[in-house]
Length: 61
Ligand SMILES: [Zn+2]
Image (cartoon, rainbow, N blue to C red):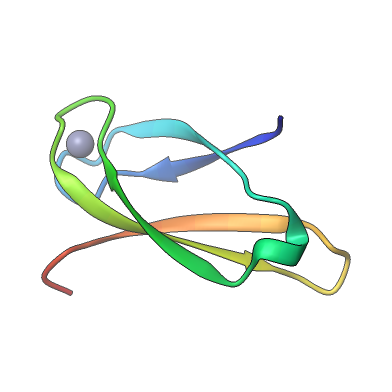
């Protein structure tokens, strides 16, 4: 399973999240930071090359 680095919006540490398959995107999941355990949303999106990318945002954004 491939992973993608995201930056926590709370502690700004980077960690890897497991990527869903391209057919499952776009989607958003709630996730707890692996460093500070704060909740966040992680959005997954598929680009034109069928590469899935991810980014994180805080719950309040
Ligand atoms: Zn964090």
